[in-house]
Image (cartoon, rainbow, N blue to C red; front, top):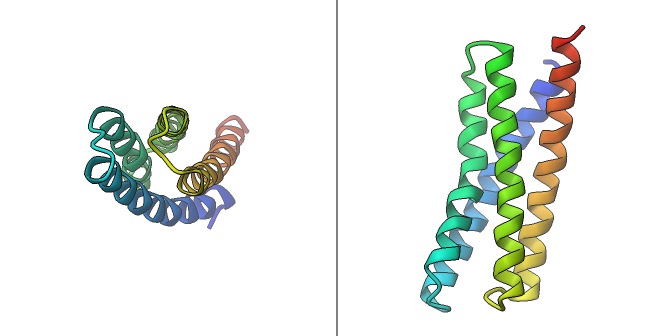
Length: 124
């Protein structure tokens, strides 16, 4: 298995764990904080990371695979934004915020490395 593909498989599993964290956070934001708009954005972007990695696994070409991983990477960036905003507006406790932000940053680093590996292999 190529290192980019192996890394993507690990990222896929981590994205499932992260998505569960996001869903639980969303439920807490809605039920305890009565926050419905920003939390929905977080839910969409945070769960979209794994959804795009699932699509990448069935990519019809290396370029299609790379495109889906890039989308997942962009969703990581968006998720970070919503996390920062929710925290800055006092909707999230520090511990929850730090755990989610750390997990999202780990995914971002993995996806960034995958895109670099794939770009290098497509151009060689």
